[in-house]
Image (cartoon, rainbow, N blue to C red; front, side):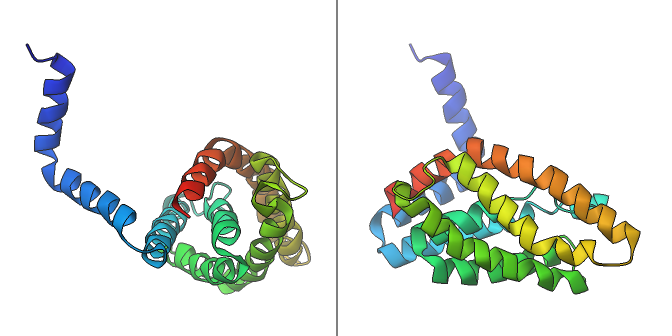
Length: 196
């Protein structure tokens, strides 16, 4: 006698057989291919997640207080090096603004702080042997670094609206990134440790 949950799982697989097959092919590709192809696939998946994490700006037109860009830039730079992390930060900073239809003159100001994050994160974490061992604390520090480097652009403007936007972003982004690193960072780092 078949168990009911197995039957329902089998029916679900049949209903979404195309996606199940694509998932199995992706898993096989990750297992079989070389480390460069694995790295490309992993970085692409992280990039797509980071790019579309600010997609809500299309509707709300608010600063991206919730974003996965910081987490993925830190992860890529720790596991693949600061050079790849820098290229990743440049591409994702631009693609996330384009995807959210929020490209403006200030979009360029997001890139240098993200590059700084890509260089500082591997040094601080050092694959668990650096001065910062806790991933959530690392996320807090990298979010602080990003905001310290990027927000003065908004604070020195004469437009009060831009100042309020910068304050709103900083006050929400820093604690949100701490939580994102705490709950998503640890599993992500564990997966990347096994893949790299």
